[in-house]
Image 1: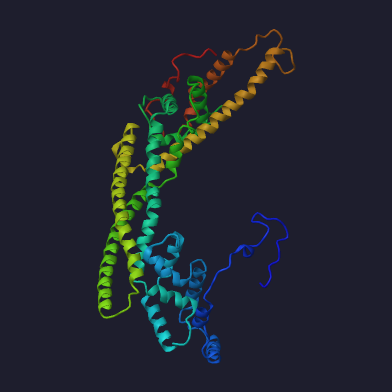
Image 2: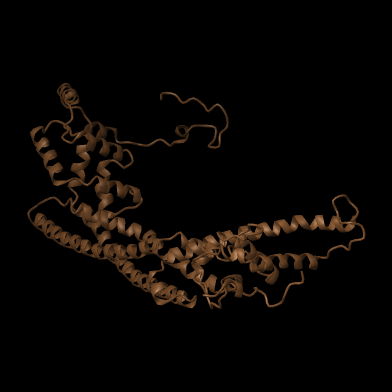
Length: 464
């Protein structure tokens, strides 16, 4: 750019370009001309032109070469990779870059082919993929370094994948144990089950909660869950929808706790393998220090100073990181054991036998409770919405008893208590109907008694 055109308008950065505000720099022009003087320009130009016409050396397969080329487009230049890998510099390579480099680790066969091709064609440049593999192949213990680096970067997320499901399970047990609505539901379902089956069971398996929506009465064809919600709204008006009180149960139902245990074992194995890899790197560094001393005594170059400094950073950080990871894993293993034992105790608290406790998975149990609570909330909300719709209608009928479609003249207005008692009478009649008991769920505990001997569900006879 020989001239700088002024900016067309005022911008956030000013009225002039960045070049207009730069200060002049004093240079030693003679030294620069001496350093960069052209020697045999015509010969060099011919050699350079000849080199440009020569094809690059490529010995890799087309598929492998394309994969490397595509991966390199997301990585820094190959010449910047060795120092970043030696020092594990996360400002140059992030976790995704480390994962890409793990896929680019060259094999001994590939390195042998590239070196042979380079020896046979010393004046020909290597292709981009071959140059990258040759650069990576010069890094000692490349695989161990990348695995150590990946473990140090991934440990927090791997630990979180184990700790969060355990926390959800712990909170799920606390929410269920402290929920009064859950206790009211269990008491109501147990009472209805005893009435319908003519027995005096003291409890039931909680998997039966998922079948309440499948059993229907013979009059209105409403599911048994509907009648449970009606009774709860009458007997326990302060009860909640249960789903809002057990959010941790829903989260725990989406976890796989067998996978959590497997991930914990794998994480412990990774930590142990990282210690072994660190020992290998320490031994390699000791050998490199010895070789560097011999080179200095023999007049060799001291080009290993930068690598030594980078290795020093690696040696100082990794032992501390691995030690902290080992201590965290011990705590995590103890937490896992205690939460699982607490879950088994919770199942015993719910009346499960020891054999059932061994066969019950935490995720299946939580998913059953979560699905039931969602159905319960939906049914309960439907009943509340229906009551809200009927309330203005009943108020209008009370104000105008002679409207068409209303009650007959002189008939007393039904009060709210009368309507509630009629609804309760209908429910009790449904529960006492032998025809409905013939449609009971076979999975509910039944008593060997004749159906005619079954008593009503309420000791107080309804005034129908």
